[in-house]
Image (cartoon, rainbow, N blue to C red; front, side, top):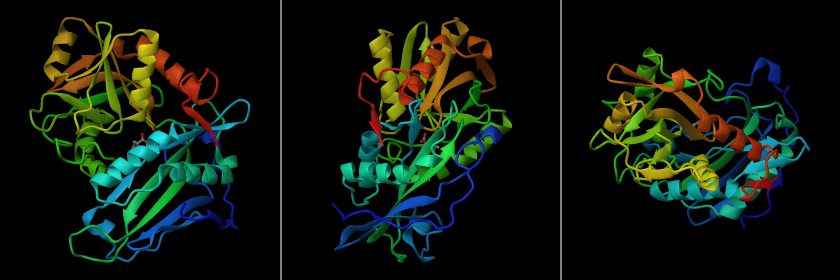
Length: 356
Ligand code: COI
């Protein structure tokens, strides 16, 4: 499929960042990247691992003008036995194709995408960090590269994969974050691109994120774009709330992302016999639960953020503090479980981990 992956060794290997200085998120990149091109009539071709470096694009490349771009995020982990494991990469490959389908980008064979990730990670294997809480973040993306200013789907694309050794996503690390419930701006509406991992969704979220920062909040919690009532998702995470022992998470309405960590968390809660519902949750229900003392804890889930405790929701000037601003029981149990499976410390009964 698409030919053998050609490998061009980078003659200028970089110094690796020291984990002690804190890797942060997405600041460092490894020595190589994967690239493959598409042209109408020719299909996807020339898969290659090459030195990490700038891509040369025509200034009229359609991605710059009409934003035809989709991406993914997944991680590789180094176990204590020095094995490298990928967390559910088949799910990312399938979701990238669903995002591409929505943006009229040609699909890529899913098994080949996983093979490309494995090949690249294996090639830069000594970049996979081993310190607790660290991992190798993998960023596949597709951009429209045809030089053309007419509004129509591009006839040319580039698919690339970057690798970045990372620590915690939030500056707060594993500390609870504050979230501003957004009442003015909308992220997505049914029929839009909210359930695609489209680059433009993130561009459209930045204004609200900056407003949230002014309120000392790390992110916004989006409400549905039609009624401004029902919870959707947090900027880079899906959200789970513990109301009186029942864990609730917004159902996949068509305008939120079908998170891979989200579906893994649902599976684990079911395994544990903890009540879990995917349903509509109104902000009024959350406020009422806070007022009657049943709003017990909340956390976000995502590849980058893993399991991120939410200390407080801010809604129309009201501060809904949960678990005295600390980390809830289900939140910490889930963090231990997910990271334990990912790093090979807990048995992977669902066969989520794929060796590299
Ligand atoms: C991820 O969790 O992988 C994401 O894509 C979120 C964000 C870094 C954009």
